[in-house]
Length: 117
Image (cartoon, rainbow, N blue to C red; front, side, top):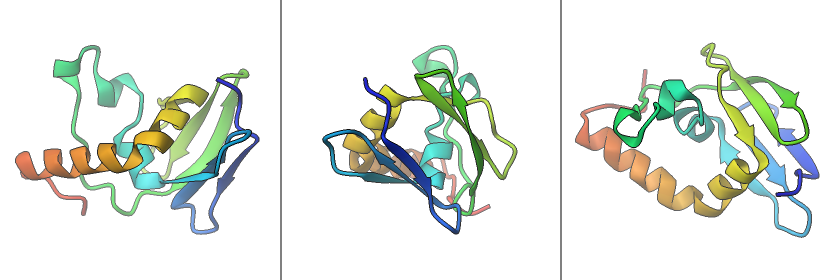
């Protein structure tokens, strides 16, 4: 997967727009990036260990740090900073954002969790 030509954080720090060469830019909310973080803290070490993270509706992107030529570390204002977002993972989130978001909302409901703090 090629590196994005641009990663742009909105002024309110709630949206990341990812532009890959020869593709339309995709906007991903900070909340979605946080709750679908590729970190072991969220994903676990197996599908059974995956955690549904609630209460992140108002999370924002504090900063981003490049990791080699293959990923970016997104640091959120709630202190979460262990997810490395590879270019391929960001592309997948862009392609599957609606489906993944609906799955997340369904999981919240099933587990009695809320997007609110």
